[in-house]
Length: 324
Ligand code: BDR
Ligand code: CA
Image 1 (cartoon, rainbow, N blue to C red):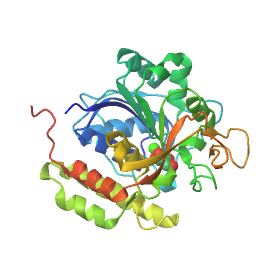
Image 2 (image 1 turned 30 degrees about the horizontal axis):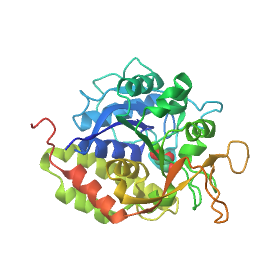
Image 3 (image 1 turned 90 degrees about the horizontal axis):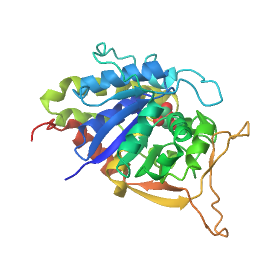
Image 4 (image 1 turned 45 degrees about the horizontal axis):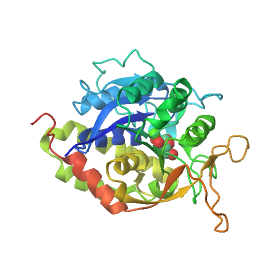
């Protein structure tokens, strides 16, 4: 079976770390590179965390990491999200110093180069602010027609926000970048809060994962146990319930298997002006309005049980990379 080639863009906090491990362990996906950006943590910390997580999964020697934007296109970065992801972004877990360095190349240049070298081949999976992609599109708008698609974690169509009453963090964190990406013509699958809010990882799932894990994954499972427990505690404090929402892993899950979700095609606009609603993802849902043009498949339903099951099976599985 041929696997899907992806570039993954992350701001490595807790759910990004889980998304990276899920993608690394998936046989259905081949990661061509990981790009990093400010968001949950600084771009430098996200890069360090990414290298460490790859090393933990023994995947550091064949996946290049390119660091990208340190701030939004036109705004200031509001700083790390410590109450959700801890001081270092990974629940204050101490992983060994990374032995490898990121590429010299900026993330935006890496994206432009990879897409041009492999036209029609790459799916972009973005689980962070869309700044690196907006920069890549500014450098070479033709890449919009050369990617297979963009699966992004971000936005909220028919539900409330998580960082403001109506905005989701990845879109709110750089609305101008999101606007440019949504207007670029890239075929978008939006994996927003409408579905990620249903992807709850609970204590019982952690137990299943730990019971299933092959012994060679011990270090990785210990890390996952820590960050999930840290995450559950944070979620309880935020009244999100006794679970961790699997925002970023679900975007990877949808890239692997689009059948996990049902979507609706809409023209999604990004609000960039208003004080109260900056970062909102707005589509005209009035039935009386005939849709003539759309720019995104917005996920509205998810088979969350099948997704969590697939996540557990994949992450717990014995590592068969390189075995013929
Ligand atoms: C998104 O914002 C970030 O904090 C998370 O990593 C996720 O990508 C959820 O709104
Ligand atoms: Ca993220």
